[in-house]
Image: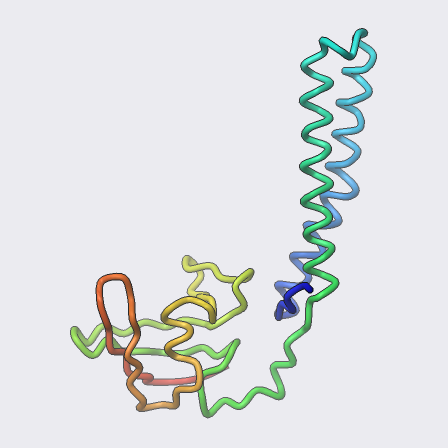
Length: 157
């Protein structure tokens, strides 16, 4: 049984675009490589042919996995989310209780997480610790170096 994955519109579009790129462009490129290697003669001792066939297998596996993820994808309706507590797609401003440093993150599905753009997974330790919290709540979050306390300062969309 496959796991349901939740996506924003942007994340779902990016996944569909990647699948299209693989199916249309990458498949054609590998087919061309196989044809060129086949034209070079004896296939039993043709390393180019073997490499192209292996690349084809890996590509088909990747396409299959993406298709499976897409078949179990669900679009998140942002208009129905309760903004009084931290949920997926919440933009949350938190303050480290120990040193007073503030950070802002958007909680997203695992496959859309990108720390550089401030998107953390709801499955990460910080994401899990913040889920369900309201403004003013303090979350005790277990991290590899111990336990950290973060106060929820603001929740927005």
